Image (cartoon, rainbow, N blue to C red; front, side, top):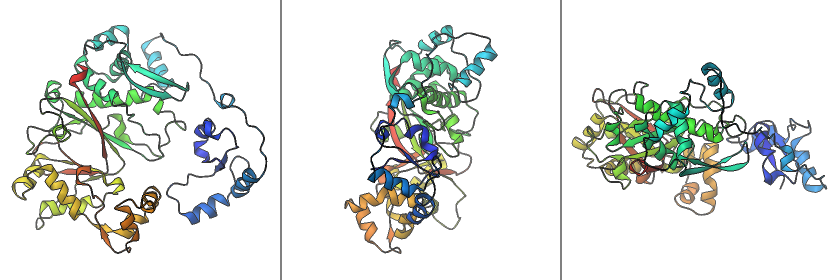
Length: 428
């Protein structure tokens, strides 16, 4: 099999050990979402941007003729210089140095002095050298084990207070980067539940997603700074997003409005106790805001119509609704629990099978499931294009979160899927 890569992924392709034996053939553009006809006409029959030869001819040559031995992986990697443990200079110079080294999000940071880091460590009773997680560092080609002290450094940089530190440690313990190495502009949502919300004075009411609350802003930013320092913000190496996502500055960090909600809190839905403090993360790429509800149509029906506009990839989605919406759905339309309403959505949101399969990226990702006979994909693939299917077929994969102030009935729906949760209390 010949190694083939889009030219934009050259930096990754040339350091991948799996591509060390044969020469890499580059196509002019990425192929995701491109029809087979376009792949053949524009890419395979096009020229390799590195050699100028037709791509199809290079594939045939690699597969039919003996190849010269390539350089070893170590010869191909641009190795960075030695790490510095202690750096000094004026504040302005250090701010610029941190940015130039790729350690910040481009905004000013709080410089992590020894005194500030020690103060941050007072926010937890855990040992400073305790391991929180691991990450693969592509710059140095090694596994990095990050400790309590390492996370304290980024927490200081983000502007966190010591009392925020257990929440930030819980996020780090989930071992997920806020930056996704994909051409798609993935975004994230951070949700905090339990008593810690009020202890930190997090905003779960009016303007909850707005840049007005210190805890919301700083905790969300700390996750991104951690991910940057873990090496996930290396353009054309670990970060390939075509346009990027502005939500990543604080990852839509918010607290759930448990006091105003008529339903159980999200962390209780996931098996935690009401008195536990928990942080949860979500990831996806499509977000739809409410455009209002028709006066002559039930609220649940109107929400379902707008919700159906989301790409149903993997049947996962999240709805963030105002407390008034939740009360209306429960008191006036009879949805006693969140799961009741999610079952309603799962059963009643329908789209044409042809519309489901016509999107190329969905076709590529899910057609293999249909071929293997995995349901419901196998059945859907055999239906006519006009047949109606229920793409959000797993009610438990639809998440409901109550956030906002009781000022107007608003809601947001996203293709964001639930990734996982971690206990904040464990890290106190």
